[in-house]
Length: 175
Image (tube, rainbow, N blue to C red; front, side):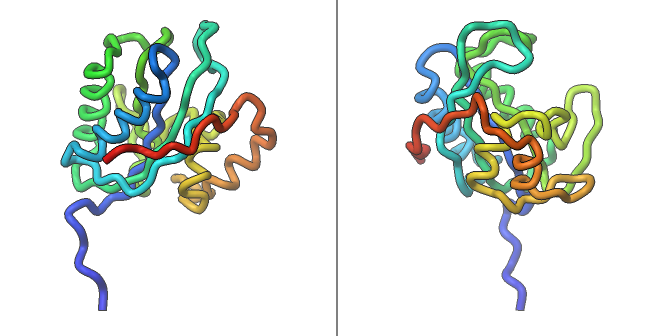
């Protein structure tokens, strides 16, 4: 006998980062906000990791985390929620290569592969970024990544060293 499906049926992985302001508090508050949204049912969140900036010119290091949850919303609705939360926490639109108080990216959305101008899933650079893979491997090491189904823990191990990714806190989110 199968359990009845829940309202939130697609497994989703998100990555969060902050390099301005009270970074840890912003990440924890954003995870809490995601969980209270009614769009994303939070299952787990990683520890917080301090990381060097990748892909932007700054001297400010990041605090990064990952969270996993479920949704019945389409990917575009989850993207809208992520952008709304970024704005609520002080992020300016179009600041992709600048310092930011909050960045929330959709990393995985079940086994879905999306290639739209404003939305690419799986995240196009996740396999190259330990600041995404290390927190995600902490909470969901066996999560398969489309299109080839490689597990998060294997992708992390392929990058080998965890240089520049240091756990700074195991504080958990506030519901």
